[in-house]
Image (cartoon, rainbow, N blue to C red; front, side, top):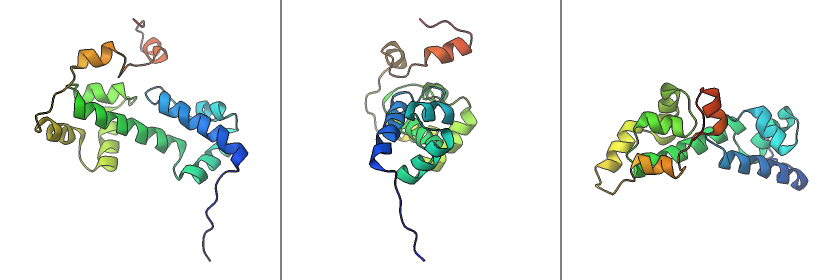
Length: 150
């Protein structure tokens, strides 16, 4: 018996895309299933089922992969440390960031960064990245951490 591939009906795709676009824009924030389902205006378990069926990954896997993609960009083009990149893309634990990065990319963040540093290409200073908000933590995360946004 073969498995029939299913996807969400077209009228629901609009809602799934809204949630996916929200995850793309706010990947560094604390996104959970409830927040993404609310963005899609669907119940969380229905949203989870439809998202996985349509995109082939769960919403959490999608957000995690998006964070890793952004981390690759930052490690390749800036002089930020691995820890700074970890927090800039929304991970709270360096260990979970490193293990997830290795699982997705196939090497550790440090070796990935060293490989691109060896190429001698120009790097954007970390202060510029943070000044222009290219790796900025959300105001809600800053409030949660007890800091006031600047």
